[in-house]
Length: 122
Length: 146
Image (tube, rainbow over the protein chains, first blue to last red):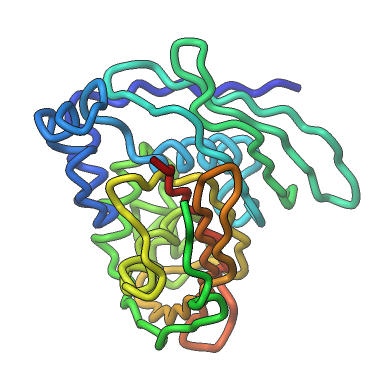
């Protein structure tokens, strides 16, 4: 079963996420600064994208208590105003516990890869 | 890129974070959560929770006061201009709800150099006011050479 979560972070998402998370690194919120350090513009917080991978799991598995473990590798960079697609596939399921392989991509490039989640099924 | 490994094993004093209802809502809305357990006190209580429930990834919020001093420790020596977040893992225990007080302790797990890059790995352990382990995080930061 391949479960998909699609979300398009809007233009000011990184500002709201900075406030919510406390991570005010200017590469996420200041277009001019981001370009000055060689980025194409403001980039998404990796942990925001990881939160989308987490949300894909908890929405599929029945709530926040179902997610026991999540590990990810960050690759490349996520951008505002482009759709993120999270793909999740159950690799194994035993004794009410599922191990899920996931990735998050944007425009066909993985921005999170080798994600692995452990879910306790309701 | 030579790295200094002297900080491996170093631990920092625990930092406590008081979990607020509106902070959970603010975080949940920012990451697009729609589950009423995160947003609606009545719904959370009807489901048997004391107050609104933090999304699992809210761990980044209550861990931050403990992570920041470790990341910025001169003895660890991260060059922030060249740092990227390489990998992240969280393991969760009991759910965190508004009103909880979460104490987080951070340890430098590893500092290593591979393929000209510096790898800085931190572990955070977060416990609630009842002493239950609510989250263990493994934070891997990579500093590119050059």
